[in-house]
Length: 315
Image (cartoon, rainbow, N blue to C red):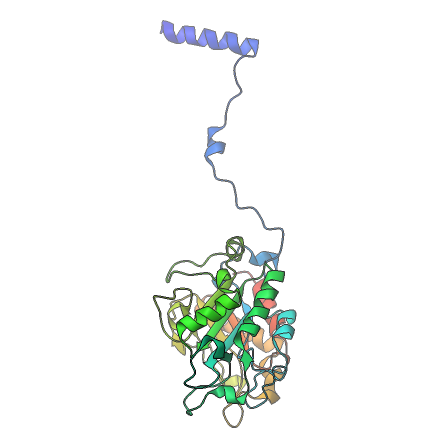
């Protein structure tokens, strides 16, 4: 008791003389600082920065390279204007097809972007093709100029995985690729930007453990049906993939009389109000906004405005 009394008296004397240090708030020191609010937009909107990748809606062009500007014409074409116009308008997700220019000549130098498959015994590049390295290099340059934009590629691939990787390396895109571990939470856009991994790549050819940077489309995501005859036939049901995954494509284009994309009804399919209404229906059905709204003839209607409107809705 005498020791406690002495300690109290010493403390009182020191306080009176101003020698005692101020009280330290150890609770505040142990608390982690709050996440800083971004001051620059991500993919055009400030509100998207702290949202996870799967909680953002990206406008997407189906067969983005298959355009009149690129020398590919209907019935092989899916758009009138090429990549530069698409990017400038706000497209940030692109579907592409990779083929060898000629069947049997499998070299990195012959990898092209072409629309179709190889089932007819010849390469669909015969209908028109785009140099893959040139197209992807252009994408890389746009991403360099816009470092706060996250971009997605979905590749329908008909070339060796090593050759696809080489094409990405030659275009300097490979160093930007984000690798997502299956069934783990997706990062926020801000986190992807901070990591300098602003490119997410999917393909439709199945899993490949030696190439984890190419995410198997049907394992990491899922998709609705596509190329319906009428907008009334479009729904939000699963076509293929893993419906338990958070990432999904809302495919949104119409087919014509011969089964190919119908350029005469792009404005109908891409009508802003229709796209917003359908996206909301998919949101209600699946509990989350579509990750991608994929269209043909993107110049008609306004898929970019529709995606922006969906992004501005709170979850």
